[in-house]
Length: 210
Ligand code: B1M
Image (cartoon, rainbow, N blue to C red; front, side, top):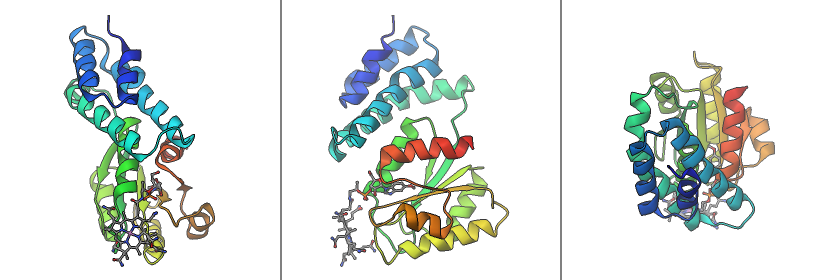
């Protein structure tokens, strides 16, 4: 019988070979693809997030866990799509214009994918209009903005202003990045702020439910 706990453990330890093998095995045994996702892969990434928040895991452990998750997802995705399982929500994410830092943003993307979001990652140095265009095109519920430079933080406010004055004014906006604070997020009218990738998952889940 498919061992979804072992699959979660393979993700937590970043053992991609085992994660892929157990995913294939579970699918071969006709385990519901949603269970493979939620009880195996997402459960594993949730624990990775918990350990990261508790400083029991650091960036390298999160990256290897996310790689295991991604490789297992490659097996699972076609089956999920065929069975009509819907993603939790769609999030468009990127590093704002003028800013080339993407390590943290990539972590947030990976953790959101791990939590069952469909993530459209626009990369770095993203113009405000591109966020809105991609959100429209992908029917997104959430936009995620990352900035690592004090000089590019104001670009987040520009994106928020553009979103609020567009036909997508109801889009939820989450921001983050080393120099960003909750106070700053409130000041510029963001819906949510996350200090790290694991908290970003909690905030994103809450925002798309609201
Ligand atoms: Co740059 N850099 N950098 N840099 N760089 C910083 C940010 C800096 C603090 C270093 C310093 O001086 N001490 C400083 C900024 C100072 C300031 O603005 N006050 C700085 C500078 C000045 C610069 C340049 C201007 C240097 C130069 O050329 N003179 C230049 C700018 C280029 C540009 O962007 N236009 C530059 C360039 C670079 C590199 C290209 C060399 C490289 C980036 C490589 C890459 O990203 N692919 C780089 C790096 C690596 C850093 C440091 C060392 C590390 C950043 C990082 O990846 N951290 C950084 C110093 C530091 O932070 N200690 C620094 C690890 C990452 C996991 O954390 O990104 O904070 P972080 O992400 C976290 C959270 O913030 C949060 O979750 C993540 C995971 O927990 N988070 C979100 C991030 N985005 C989020 C989005 C969310 C939610 C949470 O919702 C959407």
